[in-house]
Length: 119
Image (cartoon, rainbow, N blue to C red; front, side):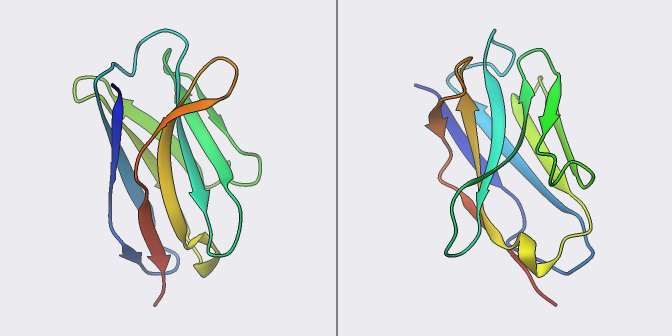
């Protein structure tokens, strides 16, 4: 059973960079054909895809966020990390990490971590 766990600061100030880490257990992030993803849900809104890092190490970012987003990985720790720069209150959301398969379906999710951007 694959398990994902997000970690990171709950509160950040505007213009700062937020860094969130997803620790994966029960499966390797280099296993073929899986895409390790970040998704967020602002209060009262639907889920928004941020991007992913593939099993190969290639990355994809949502066009609306790509100029502020970076996703990297540490294969020795079986972790992947989201960095979002120049945050504003509009970046306040619950941030989830999840695993997607080749069809784009998410089969395993972390529990989510609240990030609040406020001065």
